[in-house]
Amino acid sequence: MTTNSIANSALRIIDANTNRSLEGLRVVEDFVRFCLNDKHLATQYKEIRHSLVAVLAQLPQQDLAAARHTPGDVGTQIEASDEYTRESASSVAIASQKRVEQALRCIEEYSKTIEPNIAPTVEQLRYRVYTIGKAIAMTVASLGRLENKCLYMLIDGGRSPEAFERLARQLTVAGVDLVQLRDKRLPDRELVARGHMLRAITRDSDTLFLVNDRPDIAVIVGADGAHVGQDELSVNDSRAILGPDRLIGVSTHSIEQARQAVLDGADYIGCGPTFPSRTKAFEQFPGVAFLQAVADEISLPAFAIGGISLDKLPQVIDSGFHRIAVSSYVTGATEPRAAVDELKTALQSAALTISATP
Image (tube, rainbow, N blue to C red; front, side, top):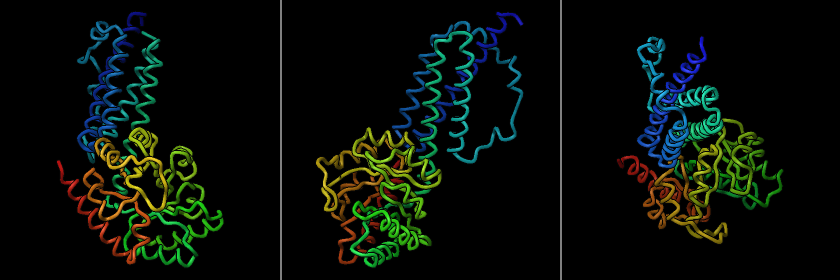
């Protein structure tokens, strides 16, 4: 094989994989745009497409076009048994995602023989595609796992183990969707004891149980996951402790933090504080405007938090949210179960309205 024929073959490979990657990026972009309604992820894919076109413009375009020979491509005659079957729209996106990753690697490697300077840029685009692909997978999985989960309760260790157990049972029987054990004052041993108690109460129920800030304790007590803030362990470090199956939630206070949590691989995000709260003091309140920003561009399950009560719930729902996290409104109620019923009824109605909106 001559030097010219080798160069021509490399150009053919780059040309074919350019088409594969751009086509695949468009397929995935349309999935997150039209199926997930996720402006954040759609924007990420659009930026990658444009960046890839820009970097590939540095290659000899006339030579690439001349090297193309579709009738002589033996690959057009090779078919896989499952090539024309997909179970769902998400499986279409996942298959195209893998195709993009492979195509970018081919471009990266063969461009080294034609224009080595572009290989590092293509490599970085490939890494970025890996990150966004993970975010899509997490979003799809979380939307399924948390599909009907709308009411999230935050509770502390209570005045005594007996008081804690009584409240935990009331909330579980009332049908709270998620309950988080959050207590900064209890020594670790007592926190673990409360965690074991809460796990025993929720184990045979539909209520998911998470531990605030402590992925290690979440594992020890067999919780369903952990919730971390902006100053606690990162999602990556938490995942190293919790493993792939437990939930990781992240507190966010700005649209930038919410976007980053999605790319970091969070299973859900908490958004707030929305209103002043009796249980926690804040200097600033992102408020309903923050909820609106998240609802407009992020489809990962998101819970509004901070001072939410039944009378303030319409503002939250109008922002596009149908998931909330509450504490004192329920725990301080004369009839906690009635408070739970009222909130869930309103949230479930909102969820049906939002899902029916084109």
